[in-house]
Image (cartoon, rainbow, N blue to C red; front, top):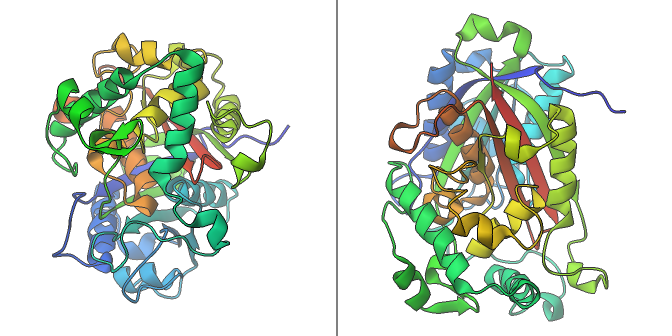
Length: 388
């Protein structure tokens, strides 16, 4: 059996910018703000970092598809810096790579940063890069996930009211979060009457296009106390990749994502989790669309397949529920700058485990989960974090 890195890595610092339509800061400005907030939180100088990983999906305006984006933003020269891109799991995979490098003993202290500037670019939305036009023309993220949502509705008898409950919950949580893109409440009626983007998704069922950055500093767990006592430990990591063209697989049923199930199983095994519902206190999951959060409940083992609509309907994923999901507001309300999202979710769980989340604080939080789902459900990364 592969060796576990449980309790070998500590997160000693975390920082995050405000997410939103940020036209007065550049890509480098956002990276620097998040990274220096993480350095200050860890009480270290940038030179203390021995290596860094940058998660970014599509840097723009001269930043380049390389780690020099981070080097120039922080003036962090002469050190090993690595850029990671893995669909929407970019940020969590960057963290996973950094954690494995530190656990191996090659480095003692490392930085993980994620950033994206998606609003001030000439293209509308996220442009496809490569691939045959017959496969990609007209193919959008809402359209791909809408196919799965419709199949789920058909199989399990669900409807848009369950989706609306996810939107209402996450907007409520985001309204309590000063760093969220959307800090506003919505009603079920507003969600159900909003313009349709791709049936069954309306405007309030889709996460926004967002600018933002987040960063964390990690170190070997056995040296964490020298940076202070308020650190968080990595309990488990899992990454899984399936086909990027699932619609060509006759076995693909459109009602769940095998990558999430495989990644969570690996993270749970490493963390020693047998029953996520009884052991995990809160979760940040990939709610790129409201139905995706419902599907994630099931794929992550929070409830049986087909019962995700009951999980949200019974209030179990609310801040006051037995397993709060997306207390930050999620991608739906906090926003989704692709490379930054996974690192931001780690920032949120660290903040919650420290008891520093203010009005959105989950009571007695000791074990938290982070989940990203990328592409057409082809890539998933799951991270379990716990109090020291």
